[in-house]
Image 1 (cartoon, rainbow, N blue to C red):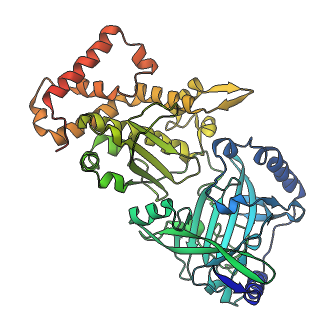
Image 2 (image 1 turned 90 degrees about the vertical axis):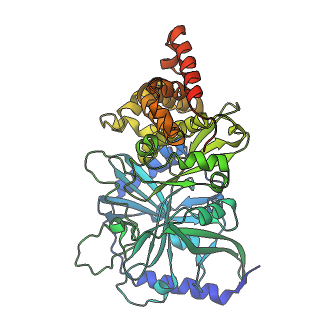
Image 3 (image 1 turned 60 degrees about the vertical axis):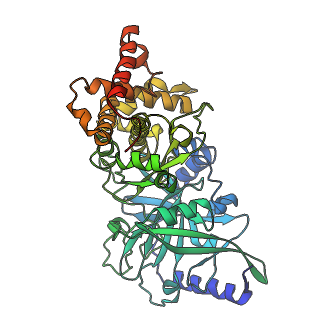
Length: 508
């Protein structure tokens, strides 16, 4: 167990207090009505779970910090000027104080001194963020009055779910961060060994302290993007002597206001944030000869990959992980060939393939992969706008019109609120896929079969209809399928048999 003398704790608090005072913060003139409105929204929507983020995200039990009760100290709230207008910044207190020690720093800093609630309004309504600013040793030791922030910034929602994170160094480089993982956990191991574009060398040790000593609790590992700068002009760390001009530097700016991204939250007409999908095979895929062979033939150049997984590769924020799982079941507890799992606010979408069902013909397993890619494609869209609860705002955007139409049709309304149950979510997506994406799914399956059995292209008997028959697997509870006549459904079965007679069952 790690321990420290109270002297170090006091010195750390003194250093941080001095460095903050030296920043010459100039808050906006107080707007009591804005503070009152923010507090009302916070009390009536965020705390009660009626806000969009509370409806679409459950509390993050893996966030140890979130397991400590936190309170917003509204009596000390203030307004701050952001690039998009005024915001409300509120100090936080915690039922149990934790102290953070960033790797290579001798100082332990109280969580309450590092964290605050930030609320602001944009075209989506009130936004609620919990911001943690963790200065590094260089920042704490720097006695300059006008200095740029160096260290890490972690932004979470009130439920403790990670939204975004950035690291700032003294050279002006900004790198995006992944969500912290508890050191030694399976999630930390997964990221460190399966995401080669990230460097996982940032750590935060957390302590509980009494009046005479501190005791080590746990360590968080944080990975940063190593593929160059993050495109983080949005979050560049500016100093306070910038001639009065306002940076896009949101959370890393030298003042303490914690700015939201002007790119993400502008007052321009509603456009969703674009996300990138970094496609990652889990070791359960790469070490399995059947799964790795099929996955390898579904990469770039395959229509399904290019359609469903590459369209959003414009940032470096989101990942899709392919993984095997034994005895996989769906939301009803029924055996499933595959599932696609995601949480609004998370940076990761996971496609699970049932390893217990890899003994099927490889083209059928490939159909499962492609089917789940289509789900991931829809998940990207939903994640990029903060969940299905925000679809109405994007109803006129052609990228979201279909999602809005199908969620409106298949999601129930109870007490004037939409209820996004797993069943309704599945119905909305499956019916959309059956009506709008069935051909794309079929072409993806065709590309796999032709890569695995090239000579099949010479057989005129094989048309897109045979591949479309395979694409109906997983979509047979949809309106599009059940509306087919008995003869048409029988024809689908015949086409599947025809395809099987011209191809090989195993991936070669």
